Length: 164
Image (cartoon, rainbow, N blue to C red):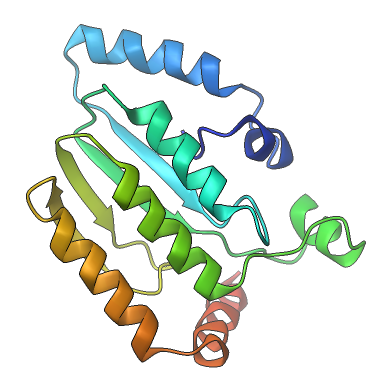
C-alpha cells in the first residue's frame, strides 16, 4: 500500500484504488494477522506530496499495522516513470519536498505502530514508536531539513540512482 491517493496510485500504475486497498487492509486487520504497510515517499511528484501524505495517513487510519515502512522514490533509467520524466509528463519531487511529505505523513498518522524509515533510498534512517515518539520524530525531521540543503540531498539521490 504505497499510497492512499488514487491520483498517485494511477500514476505509478498500481492497479488498485485506495478504496480497494482499504477493503483488503480491513480484512487483514480483522483477521488479527500482523501486517506492514509501506509508503512510497515522493511518488506524487513535484507539488503533490502533502496531499499524498494526508490521504495515505487517512487510508491507514483506524487500522493496526505492525509497522509503517517508508521508502523515498528514486526514478531510475529504463522505467516508465523515467520515460515520463524525459517527456516532461512527470516532475520529480525535490528532496526537500520529500522531507516535507514524510513530516506530513507522520503528523497525520493516528496509528499505534512502529514507524520505520530505514530503506537505503531514505535521506535519514529512524525506527521508533508512534504515538509515543511522534513529537520527537517530527522535531528530528524539521531539524534534519534545517541542517541540509537541496543540492547535497540531491547528490545522495543521484548516488542511489547509480546503484540501479
